[in-house]
Image (cartoon, rainbow, N blue to C red):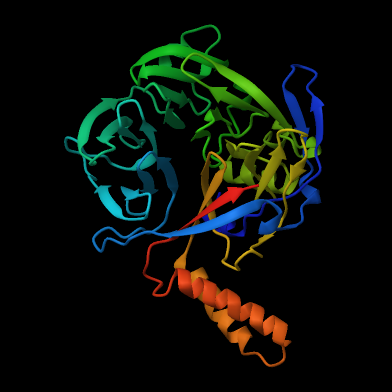
Length: 399
């Protein structure tokens, strides 16, 4: 999905029906995307903080495509520059992994990153070269490469160093020899299968589209949410267990939408025309709620599900009524905190707008005072912010 939609992301507060699935005991949440509405930060965010990432003139960040919060800092994947950068918890630049090429220790194109916390390694998925590269999470030095004999859709590293791979609707060659091949596979390393889960569904070979992160890692565990599955799975090194199911009613995945179309563009166009919710990914578990992303009519939405009562709060537009700082692109979550990347241009534009409105004599004195307060607050956070600076990291604590 085009990243431009993410800047419009909202947390859509819907009313869900919390019921038990007929097929299992896992909770099932009924969600109607038509009931989306604008949401205020004050409704779900307890506190907001903003981190200005120090800019290294040789390695500026073009965009933050993936962020991982680690013990001593943040790891950022910038797909535009094909680099991995590490920053300290206070935003100081630490080092960059920039080894594009085809030689020893080099990668062709980074598709995603994860962290092997057991061995303090950055796990780089070099999809174009069909390889997994390992670099030190301490100083960025190259450690090893494991070549793949298959091309997964996405991989992630589990806590004990094992790799989980989603096979992109095409099982591993060793799996294809079995009577009932599996789609999700665990590896001790990417060459040795140790466990296989989720039987391969031949009915789902045609609609092969991406949709955000299929794997998400957090303090609550590792989760797996493939695009066309209804269930969300919790992963560990020995099992893959469903923990909940999402039901979008008439907007659920329907294979007949794809029948009779030969090209991917025709199928994708029919998906939009059918109003199907085709993207269900980016799942996270907070302390008191579940969070996930989905796409409907080509627009990205978020949803928060209260774990205690099953109530789904969220919306079709989002407004920061706490400080006026614009919303950014959702990057992930850790514990009870959510991360966003905000482009400096939008912050500067809002600051200038607040200053202009504070001088607008057609407004009441109260309104002008409010705009002046917002302007001064943003200016105090980013007094010298320019368009050429790195994206700002927004850190939000949820209620």
